[in-house]
Length: 404
Image (cartoon, rainbow, N blue to C red):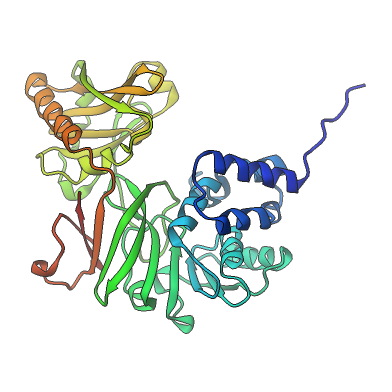
């Protein structure tokens, strides 16, 4: 007779998850580590088996009719990264934009303690009611759950020492500026390019009309719904090969759609990238450069990769450069156990010229090896002569500059 394998208890699964996150070097404070040990994650994910609830990966909890994720419990590691960025402490008042399941609000409640307060906002009434129920059942009835557009914030509890956003934002709404304390911190996964390139940024308020982030973490989030939604351009290059681009680059979509009809040319630069060095922001550096080439992210299914249609490096989410119908995407190959070599594949009607442009740009990056961007945010009404130096990103409510 077959025996049914024993299911580990929640406590041991929680400890295993904490150990996994610890092994990635994510925890920098005992407070965040202890919060993960305390919150019963499975109680916020009814209908999800224990092993999945405590797996180190995202759990989608609601999908739209077309199958796209509408709400999810984020990857525990990125949750830990953002909580470390936030630095919420005992007694803080915290506003969370995007309640989802309520797990993050419970972690925040652990961090601020009984003398602090957590308010979490959710656009969907059903999700808000679910988060409120989960929080009460798990022992966090003190968390206030509000159902409204997160872009409006919660002025009734302002000012907040900390604001954290748990959905991909296209802009920093005026309400967040107004509701953040004078010495407060805002952590937000901000989409910095129309291709979907996103960074979790920890903004410190340095003035009434200025916030500065010197800490960026790569991440991917379900986009915000409501007033801050953005549109994307997806150009189909082949079956299951799509280039995501920014409409502000005014692409010639018809020409770009023919890019893969040009022969592929692989070029290796000889540029080494050690596994222990910070190169995660190479794609952001390319997207904010002034090379005359436009940036995109190439999405390629495993089946398309197997067919040899395109095989971009995964660590930069298909980072690509294009001009007209010319396309180049980043690749890597191992040199040894500790180092990869940076390369790129081009499809171009003028390969010699295009290869030279891309190669020159990557060599410039290699000479500078920038680790972290400095991103400064100002309200959109700020005169340009008062902005910090750097590449300018304009949003309806915010002007951002990125310097290296």
